[in-house]
Structure formats: structure tokens, C-alpha cells
Length: 278
Image 1 (cartoon, rainbow, N blue to C red):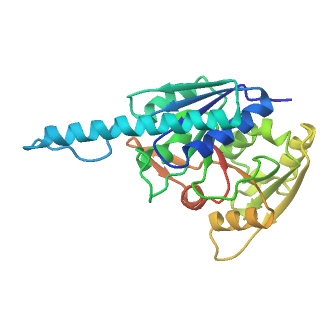
Image 2 (image 1 turned 180 degrees about the vertical axis):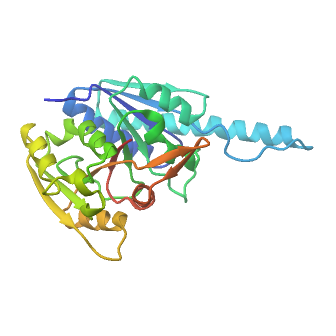
Image 3 (image 1 turned 90 degrees about the horizontal axis):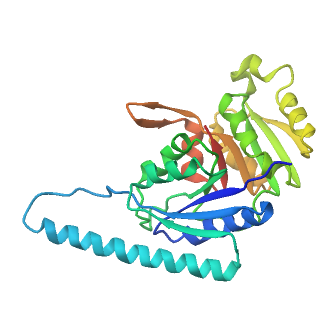
């Protein structure tokens, strides 16, 4: 049976950082894994000008970052005491969050980050969240800033379109899928992918999962005039899914990550944790 042995959690100054750490501890306990929390903020969170008073501005920002770090560390320690998780480690860096987390991710099996809450500054810019699936080179578990807290990975929805990204995500999620009470593989408009699905969309991937001992069912979702991202969220609600597994679709152009429509919808509107791979 597959296992995650090193889990990396991105810790920032946002309100939900302890919640994502709690989920990482929950998953870590299942696999007897080491959980490392990396505190990292974006180095450029706003313009800096060369004008009279700029030094005061820089000093103010520095004091803010010191206060943010102290608050984050308190939240981490409180969560650690409450959960009682033993294989935990705190790391911190002054490097930019995207590069720092991507670097540390190379030595982890799973990366846990949070969806950004626009109403609560976390010290991390939006590019971090959008770019991480490509930058990390590892499966990334996104934790929503608002959702019904349940154990993660008991009822899993896999969004399947027979793409390379979807196959990578499913393989990366196997440690959780093998332990799930049930896995629902859902295809959305499979005719778009054509022959890649085979004669019966979802049948081949269901057989693959069954050979891994996964309890799986397959269904097809085709709702005219409704985008696939919205269909996926609606299906997750109908199935009471506590985790969505999907490929992160998009491409790099001039160092900018242009998101696929489904990926964008999930990052903006996720209602349960989402595991993505690219």
C-alpha cells in the first residue's frame, strides 16, 4: 500500500494556516509521516518607492512582518499542543514563498497550501496559489478558507478526463484513495477527449483503481450550458465528497501561469480540499 512519508505545509500569516496544519497532521497520522511547516511570505506585496519617507515605510513593513511571524508561530505551537502530533518540524525563510516552497517540495511527498481569503491578508500574493501546482512538481493539496470540516479522504471525487495531468493526479493521490471508504470517478463531457477515454469513459481507470484495492464507482456528468468547474463542485456536493482529485490544467507562457477554466473555478470557489497535480 502506498504512503506519504514527508508532508510539507506552507504556513503563512492568514487565519486558516492552523486549519491546514491540522489537516496535514491528520494525514500524517495515517501514514506515520513527518510533517514540516515552512513559514514563507511573498517578498513583493506592494510597490516600494524612492521618496521622502520611504525608509519609514520599509521599517513599518519590517515590523509588520515580525509581528506576522510571531503570530504565525503562536498559531503553530497552539495547534501542535492541541493535536499532540510528534513528528512535526517548524521551518522559516525570508525567501519568496513560491520559490521557497517549490524548493522544499522536492523533498516531500505531498504539499499542503491554503486558498487565499481576500478578506484576510496572509502575506502571500495570488500568484503563489496559482503557480504552485506547476512549480512544486509534487501533488498539492489546497485547503479552502471556508468549508465544513470533516476527515479528508473518506469520500473522494476524482475528476477524470484521461489527460496526462489527470493520470498524474490520480497516481499521486493513491495513498489516500487506497484508504478511502469510496472513490467516485466522474467524467465530464468525455466526447471532448475522444479516443483517450476508450469505448466506455471511465471504465479503464476504474479497473486500474480496482487492482489497487480501491472501492470505486464511475459516472458521467453532462449538463449543457454549465461550465465543467461548476458541474464538478455541484457533483462534489451531491456525493458529500470531502476531497476532490484533479489534474491542474494550464500552461506556462513568459513565466506566467495561465490557468485552465476548470482549475481557475476550483481555486476560486472550492468548497472542499482539492488535490491537484500537473
